[in-house]
Image 1 (cartoon, rainbow, N blue to C red):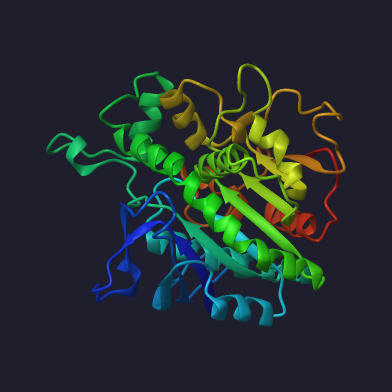
Image 2 (cartoon, one colour; image 1 turned 90 degrees about the vertical axis):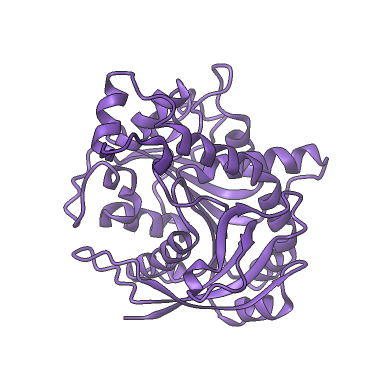
Amino acid sequence: MPRTTVWFATNRRENPGAADPAQRFAAAMADVSGAEIAWGSAFVEGTDPDPARLVTGRVDSIQDVTTGGLPEAMRDDILGSGKPLMVFIHGFANSFPDAITRAAFHREWLASTGVAEADCSVLAFTWPSPGLVVNPGDVPAGVAVSLLTLMGLALNRQLKSPLANRYLDDQGAARASGTSFAVVLDQLVPLLRALRAAGRRTYLLVHSMGHVVLQNAIDAWIASHRAPELLFDHAVLAASDSAAAQAGQPPVWLTSLPLWARGTSLYVSNDDKILILSETVNDTRRLGYTGPPGQGDAVVFPPDRVRFVACGRLPDTAPGAGIDGSHQYYRRIPAVRDDIARALAGQGAPGQVTL
């Protein structure tokens, strides 16, 4: 099994004395202005992307942690890797080690397709989630709460505080982290320019609540009056836990994304049970469940630039299938993985696609 390098940037507060490298960064947020964003290198052992196993591995070590902007040594390492670069933003209930090992898994999972452009380096932006679905203190003594319990409450429209508190706390942290990710993007611009000038492709992969981070980062970039810049060859938006519409129209951040990414693939599934939970909490349809309104409008969503990929019909035969698995289909089902790899290579079928 490989030893995978994951470069990272984070607005989590550091625990420099942690004996376990996986606990180097906490769930608390550092300075939301971006001044305390930490950069570093993580090494993950034991990742196995075989569809019969799907092992995310463990954080073996954390090295070269620094603040003050993208370290020159990291920039040189990424340029020297000879590979495309993927920037990854994780979703709800991902601790620091969850985010790092998930990023390592994505690297190995996509590389296993054999598509050269999908064999990429990865840099994770990890925002402060503690990795909990429910706050322990919000559960009455002696009561066991599972995702199945939450799903039953959601279907009966009874899911509310306090069981939704952890989700809402993560959602607030994701919103607040948009400014930090905008700073990270700004600091990555020279590297992304250099990679693309050298003929190396650049990608953005966002999962679940990570889209709240992305949305607020784009809003922050626009509010700063800085002009958009084409930074990514392709953006992969998987199981988006953000609103499907704004005032009945497609979300502005989504229609603006082609200014930052040459191509975009939005993966949706009406079998995504986690997004049903989210819809109940937010009282609004989620983007990753249906896609946005007007997705057939070729003016708003040019089919050669924006793809909508429906995945709800695909069977999931990987180990550990269940409620959470339905939200992780993009990294569990080989057919979705293979479509992502083709999209990264610029070979994805255009427009509206059903896998």
